[in-house]
Length: 163
Image (cartoon, rainbow, N blue to C red):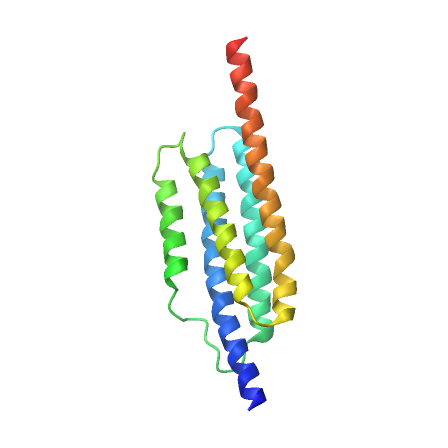
């Protein structure tokens, strides 16, 4: 009975991890896409770093899925409503005018970081939780740095315009 319970917990964890991979992949692609479209160097750098962090997180999660999957686990399960709404939010941010996209993308990235944190709290396996906490904290640090750098650049532009 105890073995079945552990397998059940792991199956739930793998489903959660699959949602996390889907969300991180959407974030990676949206940030890399905007990096290609960005017209200034700061936005190119900021969103490239965010895309890299999402890619690292996606790869880490995928490694955990491969490490903990059972022979009966399938990778082709239906996406959850959360991963669908995240994909929609990224898509909508890409449909905005180019001048508004960076701020909206930062907001969506922050929302995604909060949702990833909530999903991570649902993981029952301690080894999975420990392995995925560090990339999530790196993502949050990069988001904070991105927002700080963009605000500093905006302030600098305002002071040069006023002078």
